[in-house]
Image (cartoon, rainbow, N blue to C red):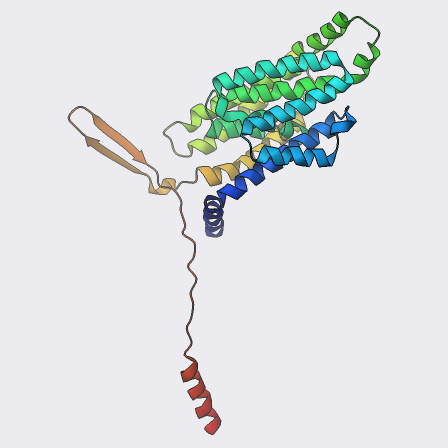
Amino acid sequence: MTTLLVMKQIIITLYSKYEVYITPFLKFTLALISLLLINSRVGYMESIDKLTLVLIVALMCSFMPMNFIVIMSALFALLHLYSFSLECAVVVGAGFLLMFLLYLRFSPKDTIVVVLMPVCFLLKIPYVLPLSMGLIGTPASAVSVACGVIAYYMIHYVVQNGAAIAAMADEETAAKFRFIIDGILKNREMAVVIAAFATTVIIVYLIRRLSIDYAWTIAMVAGVVVDIMVLLMGDLMFDINVGLFGVIFGNIVAYLLVLILQFFVFNVDYSRTEKVQFEDDEYYYYVKAVPKVVVSKPEKKVKQINSQRTGTVQKTRSTH
């Protein structure tokens, strides 16, 4: 455990020292992964499905605000959909615009969640973000999580029903719009996932704010249980074919990954908890102080050897 704490301290020190280089690199990595996944998942427009273009755009994102990654990811997705169907691009574009205005209104600091949620879905680890945002976010973070879920399911619906939409090429435009809009709005699986993830964010946030020992651990366990229960209840009510094993295994993996987040953000020693009481002219104050677990980096010990004395000793030995 001490070794891990020392490594944590080293990582924090390195990040604070080289933040000006690490932050752009992380933005570049996130933008690169997002754009590559969009190209591989949608990929209707060949002109933007090129590694060189993706690298250039990702490099631009590394020096721009986080919102720029959201905009470029949405633009790539819309260009692919436009190449496939104008109606799809219009419907999804309108959805992106509404979500952009919504999360900017309620949770503008959670921009990264809107990008990470579709990425986590494609990487088969979507349960990580509700737990994480419940721990480090606010109840308004549920809006960003919901927007990320909607963004994923809109694109997923178009890709999954691409053959049916292409077969409607000769039908009226209104019929195609109706088919796409109804398919997205009546997606029960999306509604259940939004309800489960939003509830998880709020429950985790409320519990981890309690003044009890191991609040974060209890909050994570409660979040996992609530997420599983809501998803399974939604499956029973709406028959959305949510796999029991996949939900349970995915939440367990999410819990293990979020433990790493807890280690870096909230690592305390409850055995040394102190409760302090003091007062002023108007109030009594009751303070519970829980110390952080901090281990300083080991200092390097340098041994100095007197070369002249060593030479004298060696000379004396050779004489004998």
